[in-house]
Image (tube, one colour):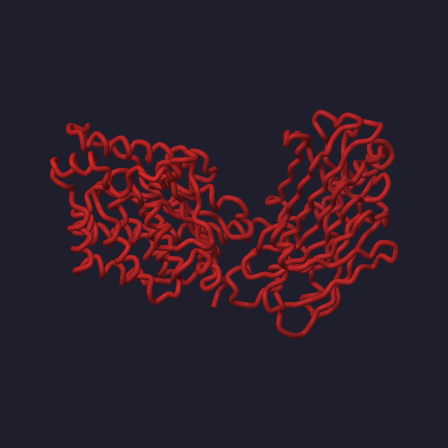
Length: 537
């Protein structure tokens, strides 16, 4: 079977537009060429995200809404008479009860074994984020791992007045997450190289009839607030091609129309359009992967070689003479190439990541050379996806220009020279430099079940490096141990749990790591020995 494309999905809230979200989710669930790594959802989107992550058949969900269960929900969520609305408001009671929704969700999830939020990761290996609004803190909050899935969904759907009113006991009220974050893209946008790109499943903003009653006025206020948060999120999404827009004229609050008209031809149309959209998106992803592999250090152009060599000489003889105080260095590799055939992340590039924290000493620093991964003959690097950032004291962004250089003393090595704009003043810092690059077969010896290594050169270090960490993420089922080469400061290993607490997890992988303190070695390295047998994570 071809490798699957890892994707994340953020589902917008939409009230009765739930059926449109379900149609999209059915198309997603039917795909054999992708795997879902993380999902997020607000309000109706939290329902769909949870059902999809729990492995519930969306086709069966649609059937339940077409039958008696759907009719019960329609009856439960009809607009009350005006006199009833007024009396409920005066008595501090919500217009609707959440019990029918709770009962329906319980029927859908009962066979999945998903009860707490943590069950999504533990039982399905899919991380789920459900968004709520806390009126006490005036902010969006996310459901915690020990919280009930159904209660979290109910909270996220807690439309003010309709499902939720003020608490008479003085506790903070939790209401619909859409008021603060109706399209929870931000919950997933970090670590897309790890979990795959985020697809935002959203609705276009459509013009509505001006409200002519008190009730419609209140509904329009709520809808306007939620549409505004959605529009703000969409404006921040850098890739507009990652927005899956579901075109529908279903009303957010008209459940009767949604469960009748929306569950029929409208549902079929949205499902088919989603399938076509996913075809285009996945095919474009595959094409871009084929075009992205390029390594400037292996460019056959002799002029490029000469320029990189001259830049390295200029750095060594003048610009790179001033020393730096190293506070922290971490070099980590995620070896996706070692995953088994059929693993959804098998086609994800390996990732090398450097994090440095340094301070200047008596002289200003104009540039700094970062020693990158020393490649094996089979390794290649996706230079177009490389990213670097420099932060100064207080998190201030430091501008820079980066240039690949080639040291004639070791032409097989790869270095990146970063020119700071402006220069870093003397006696300043600390500065944090973070560099990420993707490549293929970064641990080729381990792939052959032979010893491999990781190491780091703290260039221009004045005195010992306070802390160095070397970390390797391995697929579950592949195990190895580390042994430090240094005799002066051997350091110690640290566990998978410690690594994940500091760095975060990679899906389907466990970590091994080694940490050294006050390291004086010019090159600090560990040997990595493969272990035959099951992984102990």
